[in-house]
Length: 231
Image 1 (cartoon, rainbow, N blue to C red):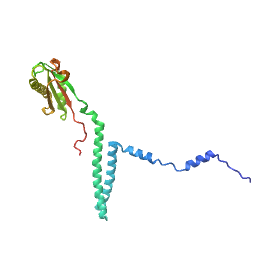
Image 2: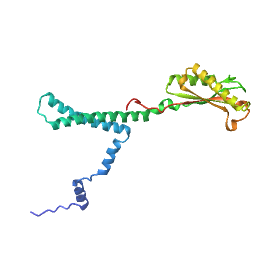
Image 3: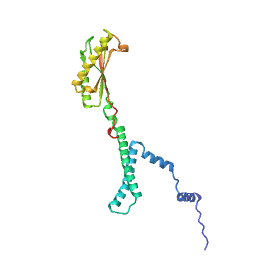
Image 4: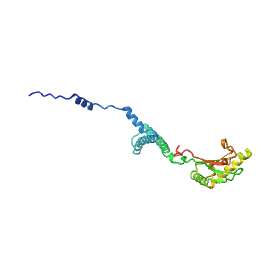
């Protein structure tokens, strides 16, 4: 019986050895993926919730021991109490992170994007009664302030340069009051309105030109925040 020799191509042999070798561990890559999963407020909320679940599991395990009169020692008692406290802390942290995520996601849909800057009334020289008003705009602002109690509006009134500065200052105050009253009639609360009487108009508007005798309303809104009562 003649001996038979089997020849395995070198490339095939190398491929076989490679397949049998231990794959390379990408520690850095895996760590980066884990960090990415818990990144941001939402990821942190989930991370804290998971930690709270583990802590509650530990505390409940000891509690069942006690309820069933199993043997326990002081170390177990301390461990359970610390776990319960830790769970409460993680739950609170999770809620805070979740609320911050909600604010990031939802804040652009709330009224802080609706800032209003409008000239709403025009006055004749020496008069605090407007001869022309933008009734639709005043109505819109008044209703808006009524629907959003946390919003405010500044009513800025000015005059032309006809007359003495002191008299014009008092006149601008009356004009601001007139416009504020119009806003209140349309739903705004007096506490939401800030009067800013500047007397004679400044800069290029400091003239006797009738078009510069106006009252301007600028609305302001607090930064939107979900869960404002969560401390």
